[in-house]
Amino acid sequence: MQKGGERMLEVKNVSYRYEEQETDALTDVSFSIMKGEWVSIVGHNGSGKSTLVKLLGAIMPLQHGHILIDGIAVTENSYAIHGKVGMVFQNPDNQFVGATVEDDIAFGLENYGIDYDEMHRRVDEVLEAVSMSHMKMHEPHHLSGGQKQRVAIAGVIALRPRIIILDEATAMLDPEGRLEVLDVIRQLQRDLNLTVIAITHDLEETIEADRLLVMHQGRLVMQGTPETLFERGDELEALGLPLPFSMRMYQLITGASQFIQDEELLDNL
Image (tube, rainbow, N blue to C red; front, top):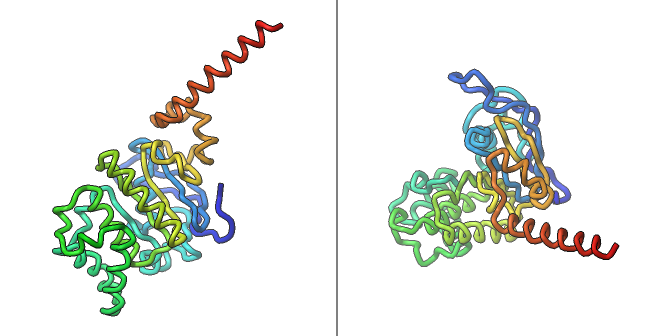
């Protein structure tokens, strides 16, 4: 269900083609996201979701169409967009620049000219939010995968974005680390009223999303709540997106239950 009120992001008729390709990586993609929503964008490799992420984060220039983030066009002020959108990538090691966890989070704040006292207050605040205060003086590269992603998330939320984009942020984690990171993000979303865009190819991670956007060959081909789209499991699997195990089991059980009821009804005729 879409959250009411403020529209946080709007994508209108966006297309994109890389120079070396003969076909579009994105073709006429349009959708909107409301403030406070958790929207998962799913698709198999080559579906266009990675290109879309780069455009949403103002990492690549737009070619065709329009993207508005909190009312600002990404083509007009990329600096302002970067202040509103925080991105957490698949490999957190690529984001670390500080010798300690504290230094790493402070680095981004220094780049934005945050006052020294305010900077240290925010570092402590975000480390507490992701339950990593006890690792404040540790080297980021010596942390576990889940801990590294927590630090990466802390570095992003310290800048106080309005949108967080998770670009396959749990893909390199084990199941326990994946749940740990997703739980942290959900708690932050509730506490800070964040809008979350989660890019993934794993439908297991989308069960609690407000909406799913399904990409295929550069086009937005399906969208809706997890409940409504999981009912179209055959279509999703045809796109290389197998249903979550829990949903497959649920459908098998309900299907068997309906079959038994139908058989009993026929016996009573």
